[in-house]
Structure formats: C-alpha cells, structure tokens
Length: 161
View (cartoon, rainbow, N blue to C red):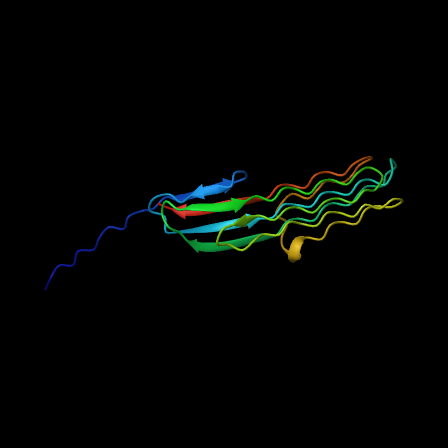
C-alpha cells in the first residue's frame, strides 16, 4: 500500500480593472484568458421644447456584452471606449447616439439611441440598443433648455494570477 501525495492547491488572486479611457491594454505575465464586459455609451437626452413643464426624453442606454477571451501574456490589446451622445439643443432638438465600445477579439457593445426632440411636446425616449440592459447612463431630461449628454462606455477586464 502506497502513500498518495496530494499537492496543495495554489490560491489565485482575482483582479478587476475598469477601462474608461486609453486605447491599449497589456496582458500581464501569466494571464492566458480574461473575462471582459463591454458597455456601449448612453444616448443623449432630447432638448426641452419650451420653458414650460415639458421635458425632452431620456437617451437610450448602451448595450452590455460579456466575453471570455484567450490571451497571450505580454500582448497589447486595442480597445475603444464609446463617448456619450450629445444632448439635444434647446427648443426640442434631437440628441446624438452613444458611441460603440470595442475590445479586440470581443463582440462590440453598441451605443444607445439619442432621444428625439419635439417642438410643442415632450421628446421621445431613445431606444435601448438591441434591447439590452442599460449600460451607459441615460441622458438626463432636457429641463428648460438643452438635453444632457449620455454616459460614456467602459470595459471591465477580469483575470486571475
């Protein structure tokens, strides 16, 4: 009867990095895969049609996409963070759509639609991109003047060492 030697498992540390600017990320030594969550930027809010109680609509939220990617330690990975859509002008101006967020090797997260402006009535809300959960912040209501800018996109990078 022999004695079995069982190796002691080595505990790994989880790292979570949120990218909100820049264009490249270098894979740390020893990392062979990452989980990424991409958030498209939110669309802008529509401008208020007048100075009464009428408000422009909120912008749509950006899409959220998650992927697991094989990586090479030391490799440089390109990415882009979507910019929030511009707010609509006062007097009922339509707002801009949010920008797409990308990470090389992962699926793109599409930005949310901007709100329509509407002179004489409230602006229509932007449609969330591809019926996804709100990623970027919604553009704020127009108030008496211009609509708010949508929230920028971001990328969460999760890995273990």
